[in-house]
Length: 335
Image (cartoon, rainbow, N blue to C red; front, side, top):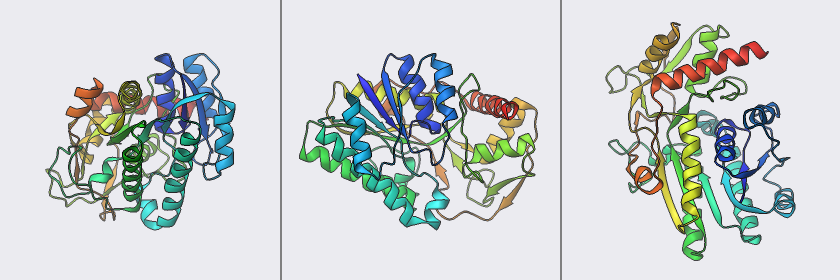
């Protein structure tokens, strides 16, 4: 079975490729390299000790995408490609709607053309909005609060409509929470372009001395310490969840949503404290204004993934901080 991984050189995609190959899958990686580098492919191949087919493709171009399916015998797809910054989506909503929606529509259209009907879709916990008391279950009403989240919600609805029209499709919607950490080797991790949008890359830049202090967006929320609470999950746990979902699709048709998280919530300030405990480094920070589109508390109910996928996160917050720091030190040494 050959799995096409779109956005396969991104943070989540690259770690998932490693797990897939270690579980015996053959992979083809697709990426347009707009927010990653070809160096990531070299790191993946170093970890798995084999060459992996790669194609540079803009998924907004249907024919280029069709050529991938013509060249390789694709049997299933894990779709990560797309833009993912909440803040950027608020500033440039049309870019997010065009990129995330059209690229996915092109993908499923060509999948249907080649009779490839097993898809693991990268969704997000942002589809829950901020209307529910956590932990968040997959059967809750959905309402995204920002353009990024709305692109994921719209695509979830499209994919479920597709399954309703053709029950030969098998689709898993992976709603994951806040991935951090890195591969144990320190060869793979999150590599943001420009100013980091996610918390951990920004924290690492402060810890390594590249920036002076970390900005915490909002210190007056109705939480124990005033900062937002998130369900942080190790990137390798997240990767294994996608592989388990792919295994699930071999035997099950339909459209199912799965949360991927730990089921434990930690505040932003708790993450900073844990990072200090693990590394001995005190990260200076300042409290800034709340960021538009942010959610106060986001924690997963992971019962469904545990029950149907046989999956459960195994790494804790200290592991996440240790592996992220190891990645940052290794990256710094390589520059």
